[in-house]
Length: 466
Ligand SMILES: [Zn+2]
Image (cartoon, rainbow, N blue to C red; front, side, top):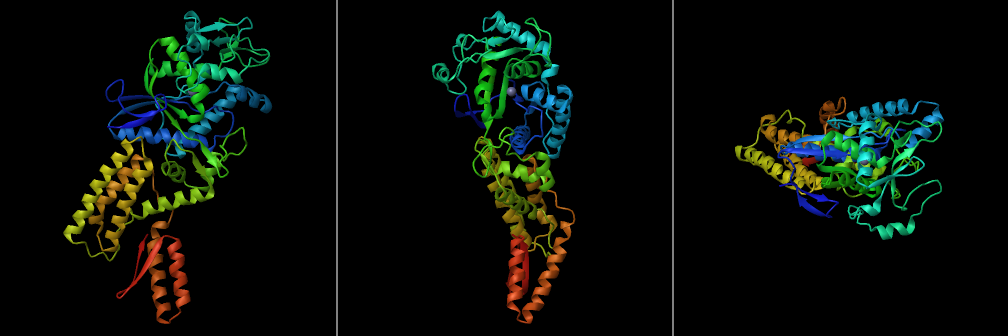
């Protein structure tokens, strides 16, 4: 039984879908006006890992990720570049889609866009006005009325009285209450706009997700996801809109990932200008490194993005890859008992992996189980296991790392490394015969840094990947 942490109830709950075997999952995507950064990659990876795991556990997952392609920032950037806003956002959508593919993120079932959902958005707003959950202001804006929604604030745990204290109505806003939010914004001169019953304008940010959700997945869904910076106001407002419109509970489980932070603890964001684009990241490191960074921590916790944490993720990947290497050419075979012990450890690893992942996708614990298997495989190889004997454990490791979406590709040419290590170890033995200890220790220490352990035994030096 899978249990997951639900932001709405603030506790871990048993996962039960609305329809047997089917998961309807909506994840808020990006606003496309600039290069996406590794913080966006983190959120996309978290939900890719969750989706892959749910599929591994036998569910069919309908995964919807939207693109916000109409927005103040897009309009501002397009004006700056002298470009049509929708052409600009389309360009970034295509770039982002390619980056997700490079990160080995499975394609979503659908990618709705605001600009292509306009009739439904307008219909949705009309429905809210009819139900008196929203009102049209004389200036052509339409607002959602928070005071008409008795459980407004339930997702973020905020009370309207408290929120009201810091809020005020800005000049030019035609709101009845400071916390009321725009469903429709009257067009300013020269801005991209659409016809509506309230005059030309464009939708507010929150209504788009409610409408796209309804269009793609229906009135009720299983999982609604996004970064924890979206809990308030975006997701709070989505619940308010959708539940006021349908009269039914909206998403059963609200899942939120932590924020990616740079070394100083600052959140990475476009507006703070402290971001590393996915494009630049992929020039420096393998896509698996980003995924491993995400897997190494709890998805709800902040992810610390520094050179050190990236190096550590790279090392963890090397460790996993070391176990997938073939048997030594001189392998003489394990005793039958040792070989079957390795095979049964592989089965135990699978159980431990599933137990960890069933517990709110505890990837650090799942990885710990995999490292145990890595150790067992490498020990068996060192003890002379043949490829045939390593195979069941290696296949299991491939299967489970595959569930996490890791590719574990060897770098070009690194499959030949073994031959060179053999050669270095042989040269070192000659050096030792000549009692050049310093030089021999230097080779041993440098190889250790590269993940190769040399042991001097009475039958000569032996080496293994550590
Ligand atoms: Zn959204």
